[in-house]
Length: 121
Image 1 (tube, one colour):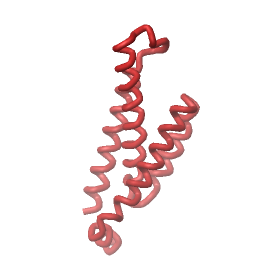
Image 2 (cartoon, helix red, strand yellow):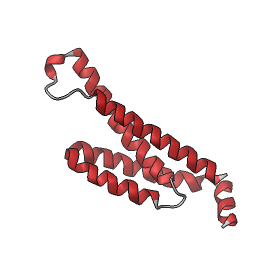
Image 3 (spheres, rainbow, N blue to C red):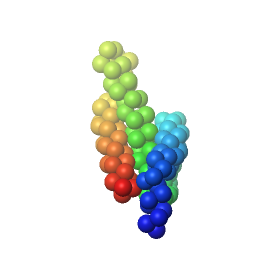
Image 4 (cartoon, rainbow, N blue to C red):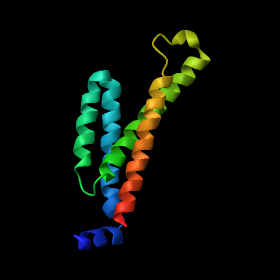
C-alpha cells in the first residue's frame, strides 16, 4: 500500500486524471440539474456518493463539487445581475440563496481537493 501511495506522489497525473474526470462529470451533472430542476438533485446525490468511492478518495468528489458548484454559482450570479439591472424581468424567487448554497458547494470541493492532496503526500 505504501508503494501505491509513493507511486501516486511521484506521478502528479495520478490525482489530476480523477479530478479532470470529476470536473467533466460535475459539469454534466450541473447542466442536468439546470435542465431537470429539482429532480436533477437525485442525479447529483448518486454522482457524489459514487465519486466518494473512487480511489484516490475525494479526488473525483472534489472535481464533481468544484465543477457543479462553480457552474451553479455562475448561473446564479448571472441571474442575480440580470435581476438587478431589470427587476421587472424576474418572475421567480431571488437567486441569491441558491448562489450562497453554490458557493458552499465550491468550498466543499476545495476542502475535498485539499484533503486529497494532503493524503497523497
